[in-house]
Length: 336
Image (cartoon, rainbow, N blue to C red; front, top):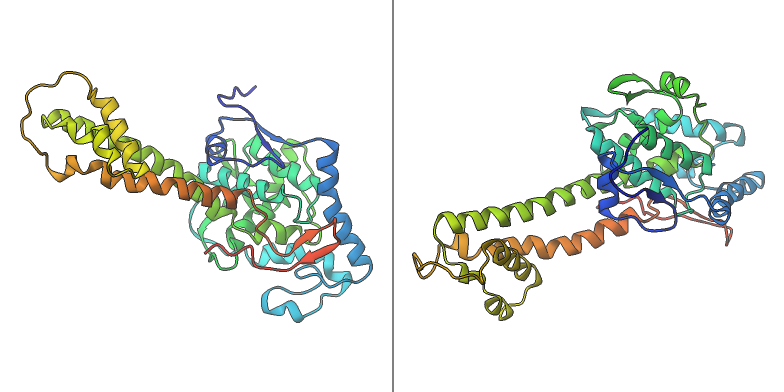
């Protein structure tokens, strides 16, 4: 039985944080899906509404039409069921290195959270299988190269769609294996993606969002590390800790540099008696460290808001508003 170091992460209506994605990327938390009846009914309404549109021969982008400029080409109803497989097969042309394990887990988590918003027209069974991939650490082998953010992460996410369907390869228990073989070992039946489900999986920003979450966490760590190294340098060079005085930064109150100065005061015990100063003013590399590092500290707040808004958004196209019985065509897959 796996022992987790962090609280379970629940996918559903509640927003997730960058830290949630980070702990899942390191397999430090259990993965749960919101399971109350009202939530599951909200999810189920989407594919049910799509089925009624198909019965009425409604026009839905990527379901009863081609993709991109081919949206003017109608797909006959007898071929609608085959369209999802053609979509992920067409985009299975990635190149370059494979995403590492942590990045792949983050991608699965980001895609699951987007689909959990309930406007992508996918089944609860698809959400459950994505959750199971994370829980059992079944990791699609996703090449790093092969898409542009202008149309979503189509190529890398095609590897997620294909492996959910029992095709291509996954990493499981440290070994590269066929997805079909791993499904059989776990007693799962590979999904047959329904109309809109391949598009919902692929036409979004999950890869760039996942990698942004991990990059944010590294940047946050490096900010604190650089601040601590600065404190060590002040000690080693017999610097002047008064450069970080709280009253000094009250006169130029950028929050980020005030935070860095506070960390430096804490590390240097600035309120304690100090030895005679070696020099009145230190070099810029010490004296201006809060001003330089403070830019990153200030930026992280904006970046967090930006990344977490995307993480907790529905970012595929089209969106399915089952309550109002509308299909909303737009460009939320755009990652620029």
